[in-house]
Amino acid sequence: MEHSVEKQFTSEIMNKILSTYQLDTNFKKLGDFENYAFEVYHEGEAKILRVTHSSHRTQKELESELDWIQYLHGCGISIPAVFLSPNGNTVEAFQSEDSVFYASLFEKAPGNPVKLVDFDEKLFRIWGKVIGKMHHFTKNYQPGENIQPRYQWDENDLLRLEYYYPKSDQEALKAARNVVAEIEKLPKTKDFYGLIHTDVHAGNFFYDGDSIHIFDFDDASYHFFASDIAIPLYYFLISKHLYGTRGERNEFAREFMQAFLEGYREENELSQECIETIPLFLKLRDVDLYSVFSKKMPAEERTERIQHWIAEIKERIEKNVAIVDLDLNSNLK
Image (cartoon, rainbow, N blue to C red; front, side):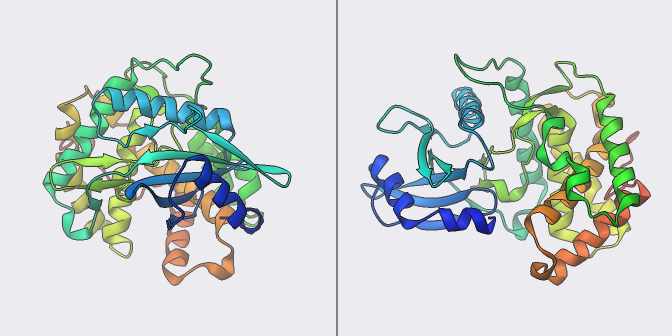
């Protein structure tokens, strides 16, 4: 979280939020990267409180995210329910100096965080199945009354590349622009494009051995379905083989994609044209992350692992290659 936001998020603001939602005064902080996340309690029952600063999202943007979550939850997809405040709102606003903090309350997802030992064909298949189911139902989603539609993929703040890429990285900047330009040419048909989560990596769901329970829909946007397939693959490879060779990544990518796509196809049709764009969205994740590290992580705070990651990303962007080589004409059909 930016230091300027941290200074404004006082104990007084937190106490107002707890009081408004009639929550117990004890809580546990879970995260603070782009939003604050807390485990809170109502009469001893655990729930999840998310607090967002107005520099990150507007109230309308948050309400549109929660409208979609409620729709998917109603379709039987295992995602945490949204709780209304005592005032009947999905989002409550709290003034702080010259800005605002927005609070929303969610059901706590069942299951547990995913561990490396959980990465097997069963999990990959379930992972694909849930995303396929989300894509199937999102095709018929219509925003509720007075709900502002979520933004389009190319309205993402991280794609202000000239703003986030260091001035010394002109070669990477030019190559990144070309990736974005390629994606802009893709058709936005109903079976190719729609409102998606955009960030279903293993850190954004819990696993109970039989099902995954997805959360953190903060980055949901109208995007290409192939992106929701590329992102799980990308972060799986980073989790398992940040320091691995390209050959090792290729081998594990084949195992992952075969099981993942089997599960996906149980819930949603997947064209060969869609599959063939997956490498392009692996490249886009590199483009996005290069902006993320510039925006969120000063050089002096970067660990050896992060420095290695950034160096690899920059090299791939400049060479116009994805994190892995996929045999798009054989094992993914």
